[in-house]
Image 1 (cartoon, rainbow, N blue to C red):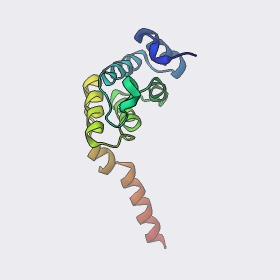
Image 2 (cartoon, helix red, strand yellow):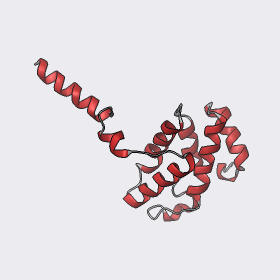
Image 3 (cartoon, rainbow, N blue to C red):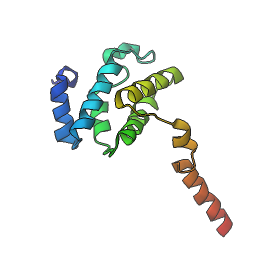
Image 4 (cartoon, rainbow, N blue to C red):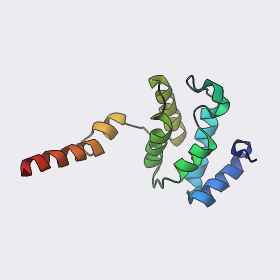
Length: 133
């Protein structure tokens, strides 16, 4: 049985690069986020120990999403890690860690409700279809 959590940071970076075709700079940032999040404990996942907010599997999934910029990487990480949490304060803690380590700002209002958001695009399509009827 292999425990990925036992893999040293530099080896985890190499795994993310090779397995997920993740750029080295992104792989290092992901490992930094994992290290920081492991220092915190999730209240809702209290029995999961250091893997309460992020697991090695999460890291592999995040690296495999193919982000092309740090901003995209941050959003993908937020969607993967924070959106599954029940408490707003835990979501906010994950967001702050991602922003700090990746040195970006995650604007959730713009992401979900902004003029170029997916939700707005879907709404426009629905309204256009109604007009055609």
